[in-house]
Length: 376
Image (cartoon, rainbow, N blue to C red; front, side, top):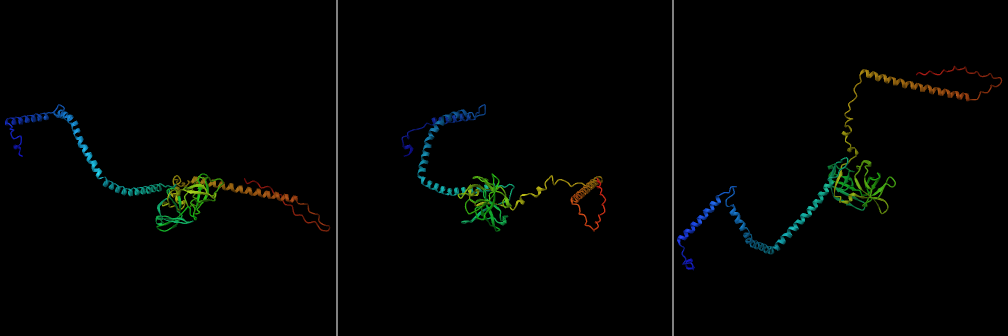
């Protein structure tokens, strides 16, 4: 139905009233433009007060009118989440399964890094070069306790080098190839390490017997061991540096003294090999020639007067030594003569000769010897 066929078909708008309305609207718009163009003394727009009042009135109304819109949006989100919960649950489960693998890998890497940091923190005094290695094989038997390490002669490893993990001494190198070395643990029957009891400074020999706790033999000193005493390497024999941590003393079931090894506190897979040869490598040759000994110059040549004085003193010392030797010789001769005289006086008188035999001629008298004068 057309607009003119409706109930408003008989309404007629006068042209005069239409023109008047348009003029009024135009005047109101012009007034508003003039007001907006005017500025306050402080430079703010002139309609700022009108706009502020309008906003103060409209803001509560707008918040009330926007509340249903927000409620409708929240209801829509709730309904959408309810219908899509199954697919979302499946997606989250897949992400959790994937993240579990990353979590396990991160934990493993953290453990390895912590062990690396602990091993890199190993220090000896004085410093000894070290090589990091990893155990690639485990040879275990009733008496055999050995590991194969992925570091050999190409990295400077030698037979007899001590091997440590992050807790203490674990063993020594017993075999060698350019790329692989064989480490004998302290519990092996072929292991012999001289150790020191830290509390009493008593020496002993740590002997492996295939068990978890090696035995202490040849302990020096009575009452030098107590349970809980700390054991370190003694350095005797020059095969192992002194002071490497070994373990603590414990009493065995059979009554013998044994050692709980520090190296058993963790796996022996990442280790450090001490490139120790002998104690000569711990001495810096340059330190032996350090000042003030190295800075002392040689003695200058003596002047002729000093040389004459030195020669005079040397001549006097020689003359005094010769005179003292002569006095000693004369005194020895006098003592020998006095002893001969005493022996002659102690002899019995000679028997008278028999009748008819002339008496034996007596020896001519010897002139008396005068005492030698002192040459001094």
